[in-house]
Length: 343
Image 1 (tube, helix red, strand yellow):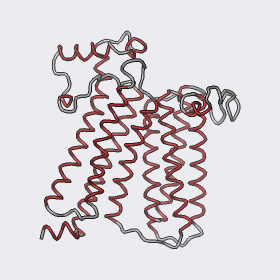
Image 2 (cartoon, helix red, strand yellow):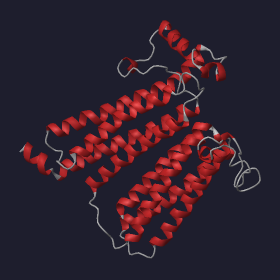
Image 3 (tube, rainbow, N blue to C red):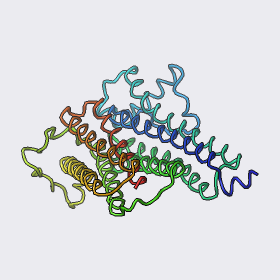
């Protein structure tokens, strides 16, 4: 009977797997938020070693704390930013990086153990097994990518590479979206509603919102959000005069702080226009309640995210608002994916 279940799967088994995947999605969502706090508090380089096993425990005595603090004081960031930091203050930034890494380990266990359980019970269909295995592999690679990111800030830089930061965030979001899509497939079969144009438009919106999120990672990675804290203009004009400051020109998109912020603004505004256009166009189609409500939720999430972005800018990256903005980005992507799946 177990073999038969592996081959064909069961409705109850699919629902149980979907609930487990949605729980893992919530954990990843929280992981992204914790990562945002870690970045905004300059905590990401407080742990200077990658110890997948031993690192599960924090320093437990004064000697271990002093050793961890000495390791941090040996990297360039300490002298440049935290030269007057005390041990107690170091414990504060250490907490966020430790929590970020610990939560990653917990997510790994929360995925691997139920996966093995469902496999042992024969509840994973042949079509689903490689998808779940692929998600597990991506999770492991994400841990390695996280260390690759941290490593970039330990020797010559005073913060991590914005390129590696963007890659780390993008990978987390890809894992989240793929897992959510698989869960939605298990809970609700996809069907066409006679609106292929809306489906294509929803796919384009998803790509646009994802691109905006990655551009936001470059804003965070270069600390560009602390400049030009006015809206809707920058330096009193729409296109800032030093947009093409660096050569070759493509470096401006990733390294010129003014250009990085401007690009993120334009992408966010374009995303809002695209979502609003999709929402308005949907009224011309006879959609069932589920996709209709999904598009309403997408519209609300888009406007909320733009409001949070403006508030983050005008508040000069006030921590609670900035963290809410990062959470709002993932909420908007969630709404975009659900809307696409519903269509």
